[in-house]
Structures are given as C-alpha cells and as structure tokens.
Image (tube, rainbow, N blue to C red; front, side, top):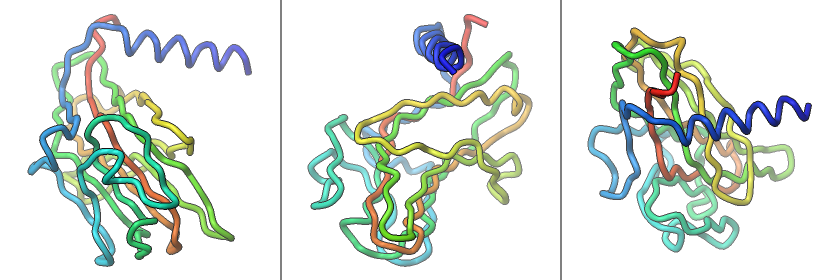
Length: 186
C-alpha cells in the first residue's frame, strides 16, 4: 500500500512539474465560458461562476480559491440529481500522451440513505454518450486529480463533470481549474 501511495505521489509530482503542451485549459476567471454547456433535470439553477463567498451557504463552506464554477445544492435545496458541466470538443491527435488535470472542491457528503456524487465522464461520439472516468472523493478542501487520457489519443473528446445530490438536500461541487495537456517529459 505504501508503494502504491508513493508511486501515485511521484506520478503527480512528475506530471505537475513537467513541461506541458496545453491542449485545452479553463480557469473560469472570465466568467462562464460560452463554449461549455450544462444540463440539469430542470429543477433549480445549474452551474454558476463565483468566488468562495458567493458559492458558500450555511451548510457548504467553500474555501477561497479565486474564481471557479460551482453548483450549490445546499443553497437551493432543489433536485440536483443530474447537474452536468460539459466541455467543448477537445482534439487529441498528433500527440504522444494526454492527461486531464482537474481541481475541485467536493465534500462527498451524505444525509440518511442519500449520498452526493461527483464524477468525471468522457465522450468520443460528440457528446451523445458518456462513460465514467473517475468518481471524485470527498474532502474539506480543494483537491487536484490527474487522469491519463492517453487511450483516447486519435479521438475528439468531450469531458463532463457530473454532480448528483441523489435526490436529497446535500452540498455541492466546485471546479477551479481544468486542463488537458500533453506531458513533454515522456
């Protein structure tokens, strides 16, 4: 187990410190990007851009991290069983590897039998279907996760962030930085 943790840590350090060819990047500093789409189940608001004060509510306190996009279930107490934030198409051709770096704030909380979930999904068919890449783990602070996308080289992909409150009244999910890149140290 210690070797796995050490290997993961060294991989993260290597990826984050390596030279990179940025294929797509969004920090949400300029507001909600017009080339992203969002879906919800038609109940309440979906994704918004703001800072910690605007995003936080009595039961969900987001720590400061500049500007980010978020969906707050605690604030609206509405059905957020399907909030999706979908990237524009990203071309993964002419490269030797590809990674997604995603910075997020997600409690992964529960209430009774209901649990909120956050997932990163991928589509290779123009957004008609998505498959799961990663289930986000809960924490009380911002996290960064790296996902190897190299098996999708040669495709045009779309990535989606999905939040679900499981039909209950829970917390939310925030995305601070989203980057698809090729590592030039491979």
